[in-house]
Image (cartoon, rainbow, N blue to C red):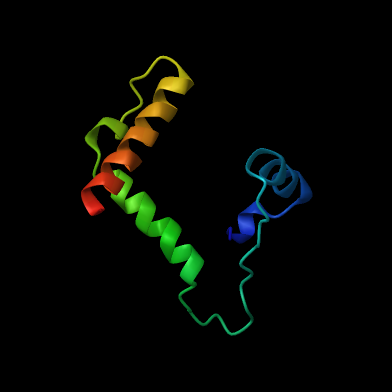
Length: 83
């Protein structure tokens, strides 16, 4: 589930190619009523958990792969603390 800013076939094709996932665009309705979407809540909660990891606040890594591994380690730490 993505915002309306991520519309377009290029974005959907790249997500399908890289993640093998289907994207759904959350469109604004005409009444502008707020409703909480369960899938969106999971993503926002995960980002808030990552915000607690100080190493991820600034990108100090030289290689992109190192930054990716720091995110993986942060999620691993979250999972180990929760279970």
